[in-house]
Image (tube, rainbow, N blue to C red; front, side, top):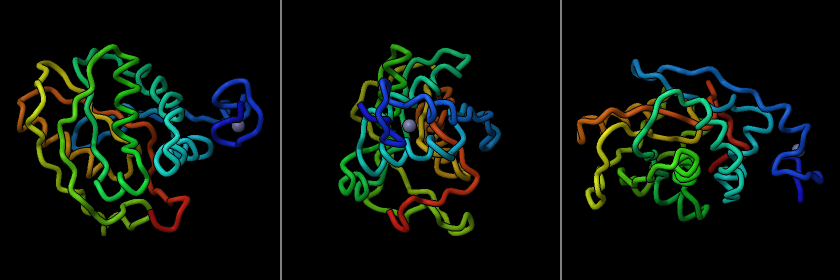
Length: 197
Ligand SMILES: [Zn+2]
């Protein structure tokens, strides 16, 4: 097979050279809540996110998921996610955070729930100045059995944390549950590999 990131021949999803360049990221804090963070958003990790998000390569989620789940030091009862806005989900044929959530839930042996409904569209956040970003307005999906206990909400890339924080707060207020946060990669500023997404 070929390496997911450099595309050289490899016996695993990531070749040894790319795997060695992955950098585990320290936890971050969003709105006073700890965010378990898989990797620093650079090098091969950034390319993995790109493969998943823009090329719909599901294997990238399989590589990223254990790097997140292995850092969780508490049990969760369900995994949910920050959904991609519909216009981009259709354009790229994937909701990357949903795929990450599924892969993480499979690692943990718990269900994945679609709890939030995304808007049709919102301005792209990747590459935009932090001050101009507005989190998409999510609504609550009600047609799902509501697991009790503790939920993990997953997003792909953590930049300012505004979107993740807003989504988690919405779930806490609606369901009065303990919501913990996790992301695949952490970036202080994201520059998209594409000029526009
Ligand atoms: Zn490689």
